[in-house]
Every structure is written in structure tokens, then in C-alpha cells.
Image: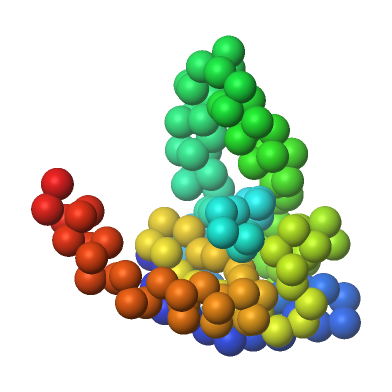
Length: 145
């Protein structure tokens, strides 16, 4: 559903334009709302409402008696915000999520199939630089399972 990398900039009101290909895909799937939350590796995760409900179900079914489950759920769900794109395809990024991801103005929007991620441009550049060399070896480990 969401594929590719797109460079964008937050406007003065901390709104981000969702890439047109993502908006088209969302429209085809009749998506009206997104959920934005703290992601892994210092980025933000953005889910469609249907995908959010699937993820929510997985995490809710994990045993809350385990400290790591409680810790993850607290940070993941407390950071979540519902977002509806305006007529120009913009969503508001709350200050606490911008702070979490180190986003100032320039961002990279990265499609990851069932979600997209919002990265500070600097962090994405660093992440990509540090991980691109291991792409082949990671693929071999995951695909050969």
C-alpha cells in the first residue's frame, strides 16, 4: 500500500503533506483516518485506521504481566494520535512526536508496505548510510528462514 521515499517539509503550523501516491492509495482503500505514534529507530509510524486496529489487537493480546509488554504498550499507545488529512492532504504532527523523532522541518516519508514512517531528514540519511551495507546479509537471514 505504501512504497517509496519522499522528501518533504513541515509547514509553519507543523503540518505535513502526505505524498500524493500515498493519498491515492489511501483513497482507493477508503481510508479517512490515520494513527501516528512513536516508532522504532527514532521515527514516527503512521498507520491507516484498519492497520492500526490490527496492530492494537496484537499488542492487546500480549500478556500485560510482562514488564517489557507494559513498557512498550505505554510508550506506543500513549504517543498515538488520530489524524485526518485536510483538503490539501496535510496532517498535523504534534510537538511531542516531533520531539521524539528529532524532527525540525525537513523530513523523509518512507513507505513500509502496511504503514509509512516519518523521519527527520538527518536521521533517515544517517540510518540509511549505516544500514545499507547490511541489506544483503539481513535479507539472507530473513528470507532463508
